[in-house]
Image (cartoon, one colour):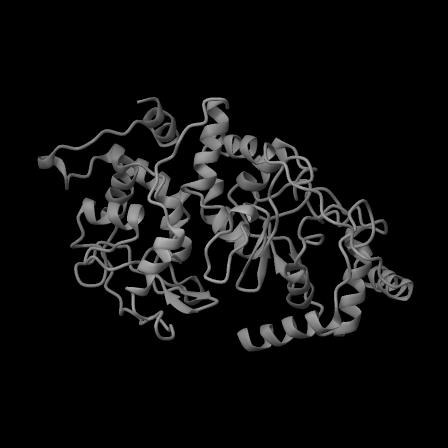
Length: 409
């Protein structure tokens, strides 16, 4: 009973429904479901944002290393959505990764995380989705190679990497810590982006929240304890980042900006502070020292920095709190994989507006101005100043990203 009380507390009390009430939509249950749907960031994936699609009507192209998967329609349309689904069907989808016809769902749908949610919580989400206006949309076929286009192949993946498990409380930790861990590992599914993956796309236990690559973005290390990627953040920093979309050290941009704009800004303060408590408890191992780059590259990068970056990020790279990130401690800049900062310098980036902070900070692109070698030297200089020494960046890595962006856009 204590487990149920803990992991349902953040969305209000939940109650099992009797058989005769199975399809009734109480306003309180719908509201709990709306909150959980926001926590799960369902709208982001199940809306064709790039083409101004209807919320929750699906059709967003999710690019994976194995091909393109199109998100499903979650509105209660009988033909193309969830109109004929039952609560049991929906629970099976989130808990076991199986649809209403018994077919295996691709783990691009993060059921390996949602499986931690209770039946009462999945029922509430279903109630909310059933309250939406039905939208009929043309279903798009996934673009996957053989044998991945055969859903039965997912069963082998599940045998190797998926555990249908319940959330287990750690009695040696506080209720707030347990609540934060449930949110991070369950509805918020932070590890889907921020944990390293193996060749088959499953999260690696030893890379838990140490950063991961997705669509040529590197979601950085978000462990907040000693040696972690955000060890220099305090709990207030994490809360502000997730709630307001602005923090002393950085602002969420691009994919993470979506998460804050669509999901976390709407969550209750106590939930976000529980997340912060949990993340700050996660220590990390210290990284092996990188080989020092050539002096000539550092000098060249320093000159490029003063010509192009110092006006915003300050001559000493200390930045301006809440506006321009301090670069000496940036977990994006100093990540083991520099993909994100290469991409930002080439293509620019912007912070998503939130209800609290509606202004849109942006960084301009430099692909038109700087060569691959210049960007590589700039990043090599920045990654080897301050307390963190993160190694050199090659011109080849910049060239590959430039080519990828040219093909993407």
